[in-house]
Amino acid sequence: MGYVTYDYTCLACNKTFEAMHLRDEKPSCPACQSKKLQRHQPVCAVVNTTTQFLKGRHWLSDQFNDWQLKELVADAKKHGYTPKDNDIYLSQLADFPGDPKAFVSASDPAGHIVEVCKKTNRKCQGFVNL
Ligand SMILES: [Zn+2]
Image (cartoon, rainbow, N blue to C red; front, side, top):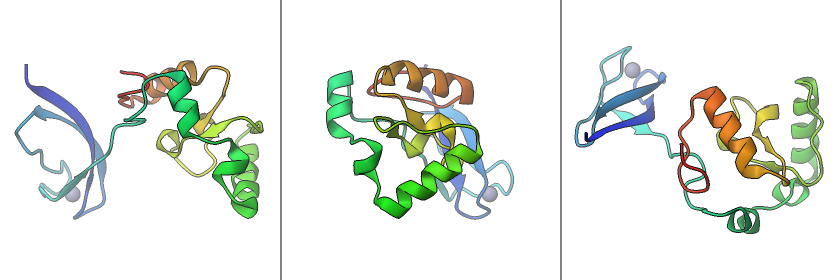
């Protein structure tokens, strides 16, 4: 009871790690013991339904300007995925720019997000809860 798990980035040594700790306790960096940590925001924290989710987002072509989109699509293709026009790019799901798993299909965004979060051990709150 009272335990929470969050992802952190250490501001001293830049290490990213996951820590489980009591809610009102501050973890320290496993590498350098620093307590200067930045907590990551949980993925997709605000929205609750598919409609709300989609309303708040835009298609790829609206999310990025031309050259950004070109670059993103090129990066995704390099990793074996060709983005569709109605995909939504969620940078929170990406491990690197253009990460194929960050392209969320408009037909089943929740399913996709759940799958990615489970596979990559990400926490997700709001739209889907994990
Ligand atoms: Zn550190």
